[in-house]
Each structure stands twice: as structure tokens, then as C-alpha cells.
Image 1 (spheres, rainbow, N blue to C red):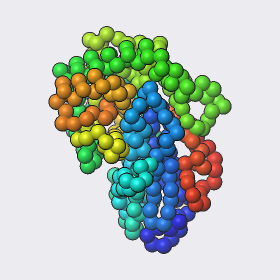
Image 2 (image 1 turned 180 degrees about the horizontal axis):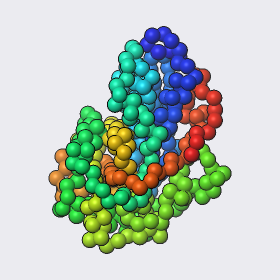
Image 3 (image 1 turned 45 degrees about the vertical axis):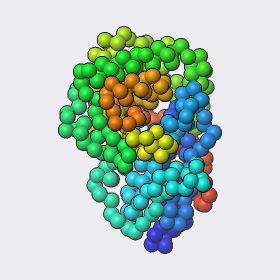
Image 4 (image 1 turned 90 degrees about the horizontal axis):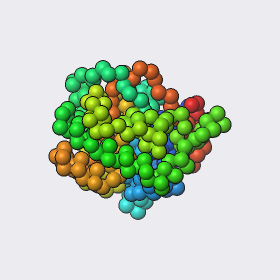
Amino acid sequence: MSTAEGRPWTTAETEVLLRSMMRAPSVHNTQPWLLEVEPDELRVRERAEPALPHHDPHGRDRAASCGAAVANLELAVRTLGRAAETAFLPDARQPDLVARIAVGAEVAPTPEELRRYGAIARRASHRAPFNGVAVPAPVVHKLADAGGAPGVEVRPVRPGSEVAVVARLLHFAAEHFRTDRGYQRELSLWTIRDEDAHRHGVGIPASRVPSGSVPWAGLVRRATEVPDTPELERRLAGETLLVFVTADDAPLDHVRAGYALERAWLAAVDLGLAAGVLTQPLHLEPVRSALCEDLELPGFPQALLRIGYAAEADPPSPRRGEQEVLRGGPGPAVRPPGR
């Protein structure tokens, strides 16, 4: 494996690439990606096996998860001092090929790229209340700009009537999923209960999916408290919500949405913020349609990102072993990533 200058990727560099991608957010922590490292090119492929027919029946979240992994990988390439040019879904004959990153000549990373690369290791899903301190409007706009990507619009959910719409729809979705037996069985299957023995792999640690309360629980279990709509609206009014909208609803749009979401998320972490993503309600067509119509969105809503200041850092979830992610070629020494 070599770079554009003909120098082989070192073991340390390959590990940087791998670990950056492995720390991307993914639906139910399924980590549905593979990395191929070739001369002058990195390829990200989508795994087909972590299917979630009740949560993600159309594979939107799985594709978005791969898009988030591409965002991290691109940052890793830049941090290693190389130019990176990304092409999404570049080959119609290979539908599992999510992206190609062409690795170019030596180009020093910018200070912003270095900071956001550093945010990868600190990023984790926040499933708790924020501390009540409002995010300043200029910061919100900066995060929306950071998430900018071709074909994706990122905008805040406006206080007042728009927050009320989201509260009503989240309440409807939470009640639905709380009583959906198929969904609850699927969530249970992907929940890690013996966390001490399961230090790497896939799935959601039980301690990270408390019974909790909407919207903070993120994932809705049978025991999740669903407050009435006025209370939910009051809670959401104390948070910042970004909605990610695509012009179309094809796999390319889902990948781009995940890429944009991760870029915004890393920018938030870099600025001392925490965040948690909500896609679950958008898999209910009445919720998605109402959100699009009532917020007058110019396309298809793909995700909501809750943003705020957290009282303490969120622990990361387990990750696959590196040998499960790297396809072909010599890789780094195999050891499970830390929790």
C-alpha cells in the first residue's frame, strides 16, 4: 500500500485510518462498514449483514452510518498530511461501494481539521438532559455550516411552533415504538447485557440505553417514560435541534446525510458541546411526512441532532476488532479498541 508519493502506508498510519473510521456513529452500534486500503485510494464498503428490519427497514440509517465513517476517514487522511478527494457511490456495478477517497499529494492539515480529528475520540451519543445553558445562535449557525455537504441542507428547528411540531411527533413515535413488539425484540437482541465480557464488538451497552425519558432516552424501550406533549415541548425548548434534509431520498442522499451529520457533530464536540442523533421517529412515514410539511422543509428529513452542553463526558460504546474492518493488505497489530 502506498501514498501518492510512492511511500507505503506505515502500520501506524493504517491504524490511524482504521480507528478514525471505527469511531463513527452507527445505527444500534452495528458498525456496518469495511475499509479497503490500496495504492493512492481508500474504499469504504457497506456490510449487508447487520440488518434491522424493524428499526431501519429501508437501510437508510445503515447507509448514513457509512457516510459518517467516510467523514472520519477523510479527516484522518488530512491529518496524516495528504490531500483527500471523496466520491460517493462511485460505481453502479458495486452497490456496496459507499465511497472512494483518492489520496493525493502531501498537504498540511489546517488547524481546524486537526481539532476536528481530535474530536473523533471524544464524540459519543448523549442520552441524558443537557445542563440548560443555551447554545449561542452564532455557534448554531457555525454547526449548520460545518454540516454542509452537496445535496444536504442543515438548519435549526425554530423555537415556538416548530419545536411544538417536533414534540408532538416525537410523542407519537415514542408511543408507537414502546408498544411495537417486533421493534422491542430487535432492540433487545442488539443490547449488550454482559458488558464486562463484551469489551469490543457490536451492539448497545445496556447501561447506555437506560429506561430514561423521552427525548433523552434516544432509543425507546418498554419502560421508557413518555411525557405528555406540553412537557416534551418544554424539554425540547431547552435544547438545540438541527434537522438534516436531502433533496431526494435515494441511497446517495442517505450516505451524504450521514457524512454531513458527522461533520456537524465533530464541530460541536470541538466547541465543547455534546449531541445525540434521532432517526428512529423518521422511520414512521406519518411522522416524516408531517415533519416535512409542518416545517416546510425543501426535501426529505433524514435525521435530527440534539445539541447542548453536558455536565459530564459520555463514555464510548464498544467497537469491532480491527481485523473485522480492514479488508485486504497488511494491517495494524490486532487488539480490541478501548471502551
